Amino acid sequence: MTADRDPLPPEALDEWSAALADALHLEPADIRTALVLDLARDVAHGVARPAAPLSAFLAGLAAGKTGGDAASVDAAIRTTVALAADWAEH
Image (cartoon, rainbow, N blue to C red):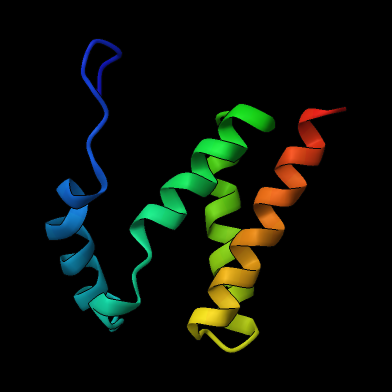
């Protein structure tokens, strides 16, 4: 995406995320697009832009290792966002 284009809304990613979910053998209903995009935004602004995709991956990895259910995903995202907020105060 170039800098002069507006960012895509989360629903614009539906086709991609559905295709990726299928390829990864995940349930499309389990994909939390808005939460992950919010996490990426918060980390990019509070830590550094390159930390956003890494943080999203690590939060997903942690969620998978702790059960992979919605509560695990929410907990991993909350932890990541909280750390990014604290990190911004460094």
